Image (tube, rainbow, N blue to C red; front, side, top):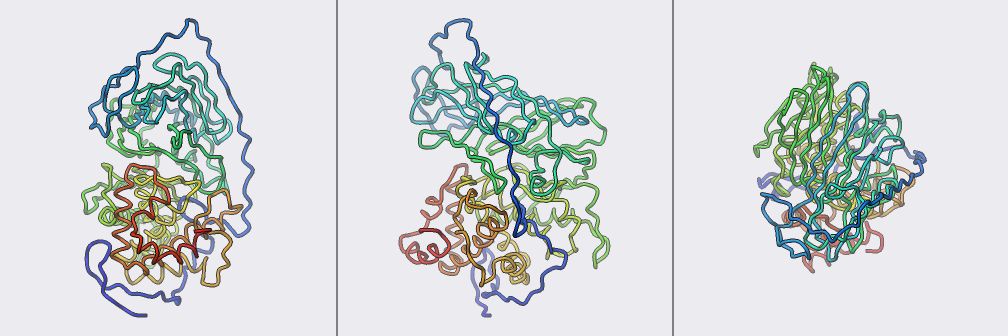
Length: 539
């Protein structure tokens, strides 16, 4: 082991130990491990069979002939990012997609009636004949029922819902630079959070203590190369590709239970005693959690961002240091990691960060909100050598690698998961430098040692895996090893300059692997070519 002085990613000078000791012990409670955003699984985990998608096609009767439409600008006070000229509509600032949602939740029955109005601008290169939504809630059987689809207040001529893909046919082609207002009315019958692999999607569903609404609202599908991008469902990883949008969501809970709290990002106000309104701008999704068991505490990160932590009634644990509250530790990790990632990568874009203890065995990321599974709180040993620390830092990192800098999670999952996993190490390196070797042994080498037999490249897509263990090993863990090797080749300062340039340029966009590598010089690309070839297939 050798020691040298390098520039820390936080901008402060400190001593960085180079070289990884493999003599650290592994915590005894972690015999069966899970990983944020996907279960760790077992070596022989069997994937459940997903229900066959049902196609619902509705063709509306049109009582009168449709005249040539005059596309009207949508008034807005937002700053224009670009201006386009379209046939039939006035020159106007082109805005992000805007979602206006009014949801009534029957808390005892675990159902919801939802009205969603979506204002969409055509920024494609040609007029659009239809608009496609990604309807993640429809991946679950007998959960999502679409009652109506409309265009500018009139019934849509036709719409088709197949699995998670909803295609709404427009009355007339939507010219470039013009806006259309689409309306959806639907109701949800939430699923109970299940057991096994299915239980890890508990960010959408209910338990006796909690209702979680993650990926409950349809989003406009990503459009690229003249087509709408939606992916087939698999229980491995995520398959969502979402553009940045603005959200204005009102949740009404009739006969509101006295102790009910709603955890959600953005700015919040109470328009009525039984209503909560949340406004979240520049976000890929809008998720919330509600419970009569929540306890909430708030801390402020050093960059001034409030961090609110909502926990259930199980976070006080007996440790070697006495009775401690794991919620305090999660709040501290979330606040410190948020401030550090803001310094290292790019500024955090939202008013607050919300951390929710999820009553399911996993973690999950959303814009401005993260879930950390209840088991990590219950098993916390009172030290930073824990999965509560690891998973919290990992999910906060997804506020950059997913929420801020978007990517195709199905076809290039390493772009968010490898970076989020390596960000855990950056967190330990900054705040617990004495635990750097422990992190490598506990988190990485216990699953992918030097003798590990490689079965999949780091850049494999989610459809190449038939078990979760192989997916985690390839994408998360060998992905982190790849980033470590790249850092050693490039040098610490050049490595973090690269990540910062990528993060700042990718803010608000959907990026590709080519974008990631494009921020290296030709000389640097030559320098790392052999390492890329080792970890990637055909690179």
